[in-house]
Image (cartoon, rainbow, N blue to C red):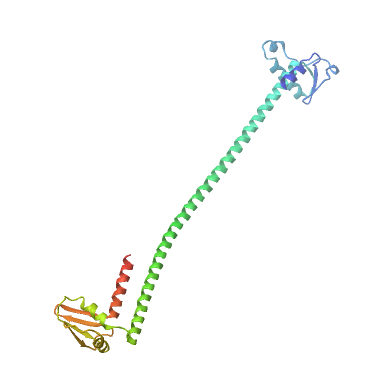
Length: 255
């Protein structure tokens, strides 16, 4: 654009009139007077600078002088350079403002991300604690449930045993045999039974020469006491259920 403007201004009829910064093609209306570039300035290579200065002086004074094309080109170039410099400074300021705003936004985003990360870490730690507590609670619930089931099973066994004893549907012979089997063989053995069990055993059991069976009211029903020189074995279903319950509860607690 500058080259085209310079070509137009350098045409033979390039004398122009300047008023309020507007270039008008009316050179013939006024005599060629006033401000022109000095030969010395042109000779020294400063014609453009001198011409631009002359145009500025003339415009400041309010006069409407005539100028040569070289002077007009110099003035136009200076105005364009000044405007370009102003635009560059304005753009630099805008760039700095935008850059500062972006930096603030980045800092705000970084702060928000760090805060969110800290919140997530806190939530993660809380979830881990909750999971550990839930696992412990599950273990305790299962343990309590197993204990309750075990106690219920033992209590049901007690009920069944009591019903069988009260109805007289139990056989004392297997009870005696199990107790005698725990003693040394060929030993002289005394077996004590509850009176009801004694009557039932005496009528159904085969005679064993090494056994002496006695009736004893202190022996519980469905139980027996077996005595020999090496020791005494007592069979009490209720006590056996208690022992079974203690053993199972101990194993459950250890497990």
